[in-house]
Image 1 (tube, rainbow, N blue to C red):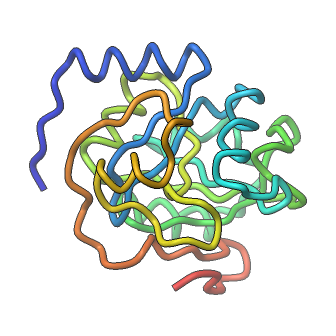
Image 2: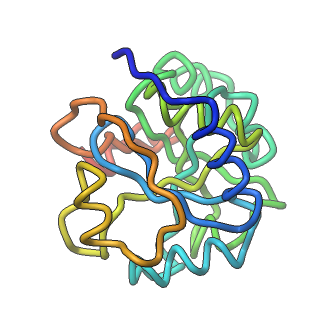
Length: 188
């Protein structure tokens, strides 16, 4: 999937992310809402916008497994190999979180959902920001997710600081979520 995003848009997104803003951007299936994962105020704004309880936890996306390392706890080697062999791609895994991963990311869990995205725009955003991004569907909880910028504006305005235009990856449903240690399917 070839997509081009102007360098100035990437720089603007980086600045918005580092200033505590919320961005909307295309992912593998739907538009995502994201922010800097270590900015508790930004995450709080995102959860309030979505009307999503913090206890549920959130997904982090990154452009490489190494970018996720500070957020990950101990993962047995066979489980880690299963995870990394599925990346980059539309595979989200629930893995043990590090002791330093903020509760606003893990919710009531001792684990964290993570994905190395293969969507070119989402990966480019992570690269330019120099950090993984919180990634949750652009919608109110229990409502259909936005699949284009117009739907983002209709469902999430005025809470989003920047909408990055682009095409989603073409999946009909949000990414599969699996538990890396139990090898169970959480969301199909």
